[in-house]
Image (cartoon, rainbow over the protein chains, first blue to last red):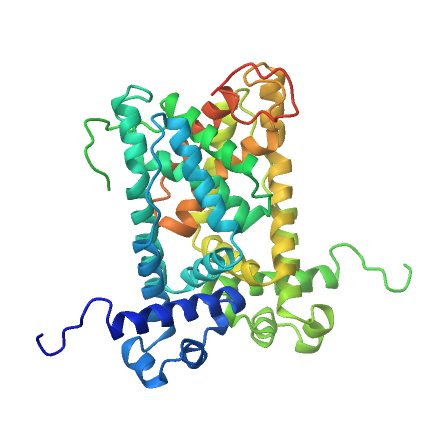
Length: 208
Length: 208
C-alpha cells in the first residue's frame, strides 16, 4: 500500500462509523446546539485528537454524517405503477420521520441548515441523492404513458415528500399511514393531470 | 378604567409593537441562537426591566411574535375559481418566504420550534390561523362543485404551501413565480381528482 492510503473497512472506516453513529445519537438526543465534539469522542470511544484532526468542527462532522446518510439511502421500490411506487416512497419518508432516532436527527440537521451554509449544502446534496434514487419511478410512468411527456420527474418525487415534511416541521399534523397514502395519491393525481410538466418542456433529459 | 387594564393603542401596545419589531429584526439577522433580550431592549428603546417583566424569556418573546404575526395574517383573495384562489395563496406564501426580512425570520422560528415545545406550539397556531383564513377557498370550491364533497378543505390549502416550504427549508430549489404557480396547480389538480377526500367521507366519486 502507498503511504497514506487506507484499507477499505479498516481502522479508518471503523472509526468513522463509530463517530458518525455517536454524532447521530447526540444530535437526536440533544439537538445541534448541544453537539459537542468531546462528547462524541467519548461515546464513540475514539481519541479526541483523532476526532479533532479528522473533522475539526461540528459542521464538518454533521456534513460527513449527511454524506453517510445519503450513501445509505434505501433503494427504490418498483411496483409497475406510479401510485404504487409513490406510495412506497411516501411510506419510506414517513418511516424515517417518525423513527425515534431518525426523526429528531432530521429535525436537528434541518435546524442547523437554517443557519449554516455548509450544513445546508450537505442537506441539499442528501435530498438530491434521495430524489435521484426515486426519480426513475416517475420516468418509467412517462414511458408507460401514465403521466404526460415533459413532466419534471424529480418534481413528482419531491411532491410526495413535501406534505410529510410540512407536517413534520410546521403544523404538527399526524404522520400516520393515511398521511403517507394521501401524499402519494395527491402527487400521482397531480402528475397525471399534467401539473408537473415544464413550460419549456420536452424532451427534457435532465434538470437544473 | 379598572386598575390593570390597558387602553388599546396605549403605551403598552406601543411597547409591544416596538419590542416585537426589534425581536423580528434580530431573529432575521442573527437567528434564534443569538436572540438576546438585552439587545432587543436596546433596539426597541425600551427598558430592560420592562422587557424582562413582560416577556421574561426568549421563548416567550418568540411565542408572542408568532401570535402577532398570526393576527396580521393577510386576508384571503377571492377570484371565484379554486385555481385562482390557490394561486393567490401560493404567491403570498412565496412572497413571505422570499422576503428579505420575513424569510430569515421564518427560518429562525422554524429552527427554534424543532427544539422548543412552546415555540412549536406557537408555530402550529400560526399555521392554523393561516389555513383557517384560506380554507373557505376550498369550501366554496366544494359548494361550486369544482372539487368533490367530502374533501378535507384544510388539507387542500396545506398542499399549496408544502412544496414551497420544502424548497425553502430542504432542497434549496428556486422560489420563483413558476414554483408558486406550479404548487397551486398541483394542489388544485389533486383536489379535483379527489385526492383530499377523507375516508370517513362519502361518496368518493373518483379513484386515483
